Image (cartoon, rainbow, N blue to C red):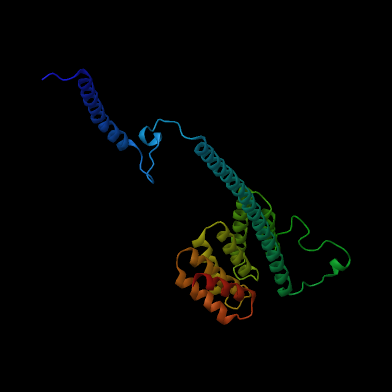
Length: 273
């Protein structure tokens, strides 16, 4: 049976439309598969790290780096300021220590003068003639030798480090010479004490210890014993023998209550105990 032309054309059209619809469906599904889901957005940067970043992120990073650089500069300024302050304070402490030592030496000299018996007044001195010791050819007395050694200490105080240490060493030699020449002299305990002080300043701890021990052992009634006990405590502590250091400090506190050396001993013992 023959099909009319119009019916045949309609059938062909329907078949073509159905094929087109079937072919288009997979494309639709694939396009849906690559579309981002809500809440888990995918950007071009996630797919390709070489993709340029948005300008807003660059601006934030530059701002953060600028703030960090400014903070580093501020910290460097603070460090420079603190370094200058430390140097100034160190200089002040050194100057105060020197002034205190000079005053201490002056007081020691005055106390020695007060303990000394008055010198006899001769007729020649009343007439205005030269007094003993004024003649450069006259032998130096014990007092002259002590004052000469003392003068070396005070002179060395204001000198640079090298000259200061040399002055201390020369003063030690002069004090030793005084002790050797006047073993029973009234300035001998003071000379031994200052030998210990100067050798402590030179960090010659064992020699300083020996000098202070001689003061408290050979001259137990002398006015320098409290100071020697305190310095022995300092020396033994620096030598690493804290127990012996505290023994001397506690003895000083017990036997010489109220003295300046006792107050120093209490503070020092509290630090190292």
